[in-house]
Length: 416
Image: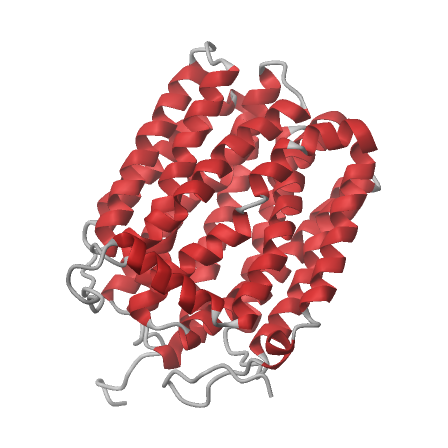
C-alpha cells in the first residue's frame, strides 16, 4: 500500500481538529448549563415565569450584539475574538457557580450573569462559523460538517445526561462550575489556532459601512432571509419548550432534572445518529431536504403536551435531534456554497440575529402564556406553529430549488 495515499480524513487539517476539540470541551458544559440554570431558578422558588425571564436575559444580549460581533469577526483575527469571548464566558459562569453553590443567589443576579453569558455568545458565534468555513475545502464540506456536528452533539449527549444527573445529585452549582472550566480550556485550545486573515475591504471604511455591505449580501438572497424569518418565530417556540416548559414539566410530572437530562441526551443522540447517516449523503435540493427536518422540531412540544411517559418523550427528543442535523448540515452547505468568505461572519450574524430576534420574547412570555392557555395549551400552540412554519418555508421557490453546486466553485442561486 502506498504510504503517501491520502487518508479518509486527510481534509481535516490542524485548525479543524483544534476547533472541533475545543467545541467538544466547551459543549460538555454548555449542554448541562441550561438544565442547571433552570433548576437553580426553580430551586429558589421560581416557576415558569422566572425561568423564562432568566432565559430571555441570556438571549437578549446575544440578539443585541450579534451584528457587532459579526463585523468584528470580519475585521479582526477570528480566533482572537473567540478566545476573548470564551474567557469572558468562563468568568461569568464561574461567578454564577459561586453564587449558586453558596446558596445566596438572587433572581437579579441570575438575570445579570445570564445576560453576560449571552453577550459572550454574540461575539463567539459569528467568528466560530467563519473559522469553520475557513478550515475545510468546499469539496469536503459535507464530511467536515457532519463530523463536526457529530463531535459537537456527542458532547451534548454526555453533557446533558451528566448535567441532569449532577443537578439531581449535588445541585446546579457544580454543573455551572464545570461549564466555566470548559470555557477556559476551550479558550486555551483556540489560542493554538492559526487562521489566515480574510481579505480586507477598502481602507478607511467603518463598521457601519461593513454592516451595510453584509446586509446587502444577506437581503439579496431570498432563500436566506426566508428561512431566517421562519426561524425567527420557530426559535421563540423552541426556546420556550426546551428551556422553560421542559424543565417545568419534568419537575411537576416526571423525575425532575435527571429525566430532563436524559431527554436532552436523547436529543443529542438523535443528532449524532443522523450525522452518521448523512455523512455521505448529498441531496441535490439542499434546502428542500433540510426543511423536511424542521417538521421534526415539533415532536418534543407535542410529546410534553400529551404528558407522554419518559420513553415517548425520549423518542420525540431523538426525532427532533435528527431533524436538527438534517437541517443544520444542509444549511451550512448552502451558506458555504453561496456566501463569499470575506462576508461570512457578517452574513452569519444577520442569520443569527434574525433567527434569535424573537427568542427572548418567546421565553419571557412563556410563563404568562402558560397561565393564559394552561401549560398544555401553550405546548400545543408551540408544536402546531412549528409544523405550520415548516410548511410555509417550502412555499418559497428558492428554498425548494436551491441546488448543490456541481463544482467547488461558488455559483449564484437560481430559482429555476
